[in-house]
Each structure stands twice: as structure tokens, then as C-alpha cells.
Length: 82
Image (tube, rainbow, N blue to C red; front, top):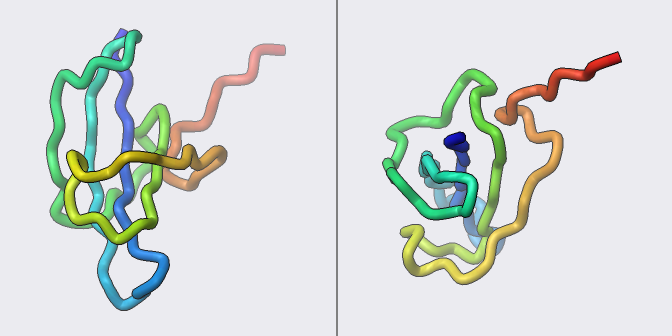
């Protein structure tokens, strides 16, 4: 099963710098299958997970740590079985 992950690269020290959005497709072990930079922020909630790095890095390869954002607006809602 493939997972869609949204990575948001922002800068907490300089809020004037625009955040970068990266879409990652990975498998169940966490291996990255595909990586693409989005031109604009996504509008619909279609991601399984949302991760954020606010250290001011400009690309995914230079980041060392990420924070997972639970309940993010761009994360798919989970189906609740009753």
C-alpha cells in the first residue's frame, strides 16, 4: 500500500519566506518512491500524513528532522467504523 505524504518546509524565524510544499509517495516501510515539488499549496485534503520542518531549509535532502502534524487541514479524514 502506498502512502501520500505532504512535507511543508517553512521558516519559523522569517515568516516572510514562503513555505515550500513537497509531495512524497512512499511504501509501507517508508522508502521514498516518488518526490515532487508542488507549485502552489494544495487545496483538497488528499494526504495520508502531513510533516513539517520549520528550520528554514529549502530542499528535502538538507532536512534532518520533521514534526508530524496530526489533524492537519490537508490530511484525509479517517473513516470511523462504529
